[in-house]
Amino acid sequence: MLNRDVLLITVMAGLASFATPSIAQDKSELRNEAKNQAAQIRSVGEPKDRCSLGAGFGPSGAITAVYGSPTFFIGDKLLLINGVDVKGQADKVNEVLRGIAPGSTISVKVERAGTEVDLAPSCGNSREHNATILSALDAAARGDFGQCFALFSSREDFSNYYAARWKLNCLKFTKKPSDWEIAGKTFTMLQLGVGEAVWEPSLRQQLVLTMRANERLVGESRYELLVKAAERWPGGEDIFKNSEPDRAQLRAAAEREIKSKLYDPDSARVEFPYDFTNSSWKPWFKKPIEGYWTCGHYNAKNRLGGYTGSAWFVVVLSDSAAVHYIELGTTDDFDLLSLQCQRALEHLDRAPAEVREAANTVAVPAQLSLGDEIKKLVELRNSGALTEEEFQAAKQRLLNSPVSP
Picture: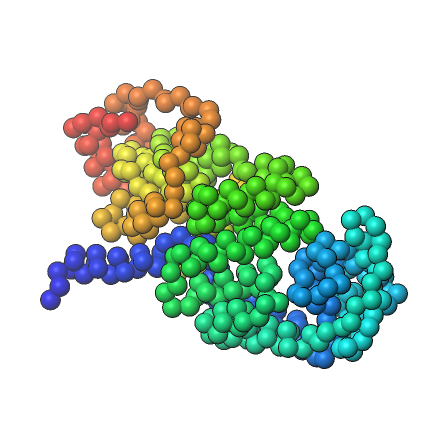
């Protein structure tokens, strides 16, 4: 029979393998998203034989990708289709196209490089394109992520950010995808997104956050290429600057929340040896929590007046320093958070000065005299916070050896 401690270590090591930080969606969330998107597409009557422009367009109606069409250029902004005003209305573009038969020649007015241009493209047929999207989403909804990945990889007209995002997320849930394949598909997705965001400003803010969350994954050189491309957006440098969180503020908010959970917050020592990273933290048996997270150490006095010993904590915050999640570990030999944080260190850089050092150093209170310490214990006993046994044990410890700060 296995020794009890050996068994515990084995079980906990296995559990820890499921508790590492994540940058992917939860599997059930991805399935639900696929189910909802498929339902939305079907609710408007797709797939059907109807007009296709042979080009992809974003939320504002700007052409972001061209699939063999000689008529449209990337960056064209759709203004009129058969005389109907569709400017800035992607939903209206689709509504109009759904009422036009494949093979029809239509009149389209676009804005190209600041000039209005009249075009007369011939419609393709969107049925096969949309049917493949639906098949891929259906596969993801039922948990067949390999089929989802294969379908989103099957067509040349899926070389856009939307399809690349689905391809990547489905790949992550196939059996044992390699790290280099995940990194490569992530880089491709971000490249496509950065290119489309040149013409679609509404994509930029979220793309910057997604880039930051995947910086470590794609690697330094490829990340620099993405940043340089994104900084060429109008106002791109400001978008990056504004997306960088105030790390001193993150530390202050995290420390404040940690101390609020402790019996004696004034005695707390909170250490931030590691920087905050932007991805997600996967608590035990819960869904991943997105945000800026880090692991660190805390120590504080308990109600007996003694320090409990250094233990791990994890905290997840928004970029504006709102606390999304906090968990305090213990000094137990088999503390689960300790295992989880130690496994997570490969995802964390050493803390910069603004994270490592508190912005405002709080003076350490003067050491209380023995009489003051005993008086404090008496007050705790009288208030009911300590039992008589606890009071006597704490008093004896004080008499034998002073509490070390």
